[in-house]
Length: 287
Image (cartoon, rainbow, N blue to C red; front, side, top):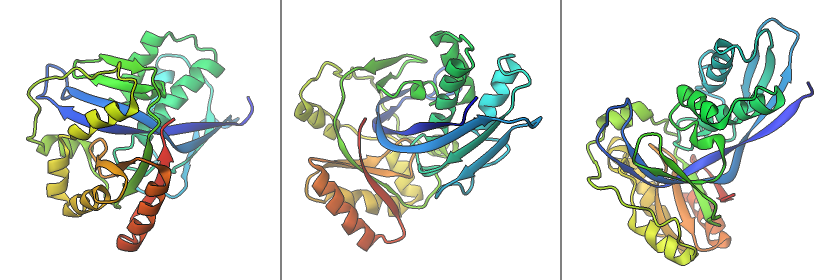
């Protein structure tokens, strides 16, 4: 087995509605998810050692538990199911996606590895079973098995894949805050009452943007209450020329801004560097 390099793309919640907890362990969520060009890089090769060697490198390697993370969970699960008997790997993950930011880096890493092992090790796991395995690693992992625009319907395990490419210009800003998803959901008291059918048939990008501008992220109020500087950042992005809307993605702390053109997004990033010099940011496009 040669050394493989895999791209692990970040996800963006364009809006997020939270409903009161159902019969499962999670709140039911309605959200439109897209993926952008920002990605981690996973290098993987077989090793002759009798154990895995896992390393995290890159700007955002800090605060990742080296013994318990989505990579180790995938390996443990596949061995438990007898898919990787006596096979061990050297894996390096270059973290370009901020940890604890709501950008789904860990979930994406797990999904990429599951797809890789299934294909390259000829595991012959069908889509339904692969999705079940992914769900055992984490809530967002099944979503990241395909880098397609995805609508979470608010019903347990029901998602809709959307073929349409959104072609969005995005600025992502990470304010150096690690948000605990569990903590944010526990503290959140802002619940949506009714599910709305997302108009996946919208073909006109302007109509889609008009629709998205009216939406919100239900977790944003609690995140801003806990970390007021995130609210200041959202307002700053929102006020810039060419910005359609700005909000947190997922449970935060990363903030996104959707812009009418890439030049406006790049200029806004320059302004952010001046006003918030310690924050990390990137301009990207949806894939």
